[in-house]
Amino acid sequence: MGCVIEALGLVKAFGGRRVVDGVSFSAGVGFTALMGPNGAGKTTTLSMVVGALRPDRGSVRVCGFYMWGRDGLRARRLLGYAPQDMPFKDKLSGYENLVWIGLIKGLGLFEAGREARRLLEEVGLYEHRGKRVALYSGGMRRKLAVAAALLGNPEALVLDEPTSGLDPVARADLWDLLAKVGRGRAVLFTTHMAEEAQRRADFVVIMHEGRVAAAGRPGELVAKYAPNPRVLVYAEGAKGIEVEGARPREAGPGVYEYEVADASLWIPKLAEAYLRVGAKVWRIEAREPGLEEVFFALTGRRL
Ligand SMILES: Nc1ncnc2c1ncn2[C@@H]1O[C@H](COP(=O)(O)OP(=O)(O)OP(=O)(O)O)[C@@H](O)[C@H]1O
Image 1 (cartoon, rainbow, N blue to C red):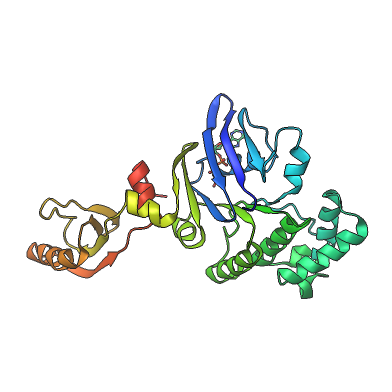
Image 2 (cartoon, helix red, strand yellow; image 1 turned 45 degrees about the vertical axis):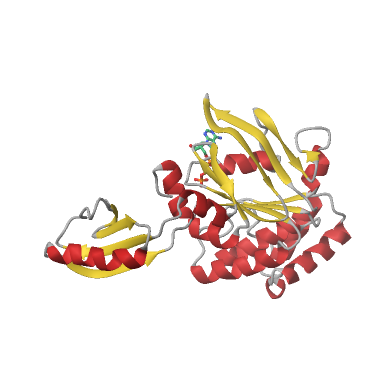
């Protein structure tokens, strides 16, 4: 079966405002994305999941052990966590940082050193092991954070926005690494990028205003909430026009999005309608719906 991370009715309020309001989900072996816009409550939820923040209500189970009960220590040991900004000591090397974190996690000095070397190799930082972390790039810091989360060989991994702030090349590189180290583990990660969740997650939990708006496999969510393709018209000289009852949504300056049943029928129809009113049409394209459209269908907002 493998390890499962379970959030069971989590509630957390700050100053009387519930920022997490009854969140439940389970993340089994594979990649689970906790997806939502900034402020949806993702980080607060993760903090409770990893045992850093006590829930007002509800509980968390990691591989069957309750995080906030007698088994808390066990649950914590089974789980590795990489926060958005890992508090590394910039003056120490990558190797020294990992040894230091290993000691905090309860490893002996010899084992911490051995694990640090093994993990630096695994994440591709071995040749930079002696370099001060202050000199690491953003991508290298993230890899080191993944290595730190893997100290103690946890069954579950929790990653808060693992790729935020990275350029596309560094992001793809980090995902190659995560795919490798995530194999056989329950990996829970947060993202506010629909494309990333769609591409990388086996299962997606969509959060909005402190609650779970929907959860499922990406393909199932799209089929259920946003099955229709979209046609985008890039035009100048006409505001979005209604065509045969289909009303556009302004997807950007001069970009009008139509939700249609059959894109191949609607592309010529829309081109004709815009040309008829004297607009310049730069481009028309069909787009398959994805989790961005699912989020919009559920909340009326864009991610
Ligand atoms: N310690 C705190 N005290 C008061 N309010 C807080 C605290 N932590 C978070 N909040 C508020 O709770 C809400 C949810 O924050 P949270 O960081 O969990 O969202 P998020 O989905 O992770 O967003 P982001 O991607 O920006 O981190 C926000 O409105 C935030 O301002």
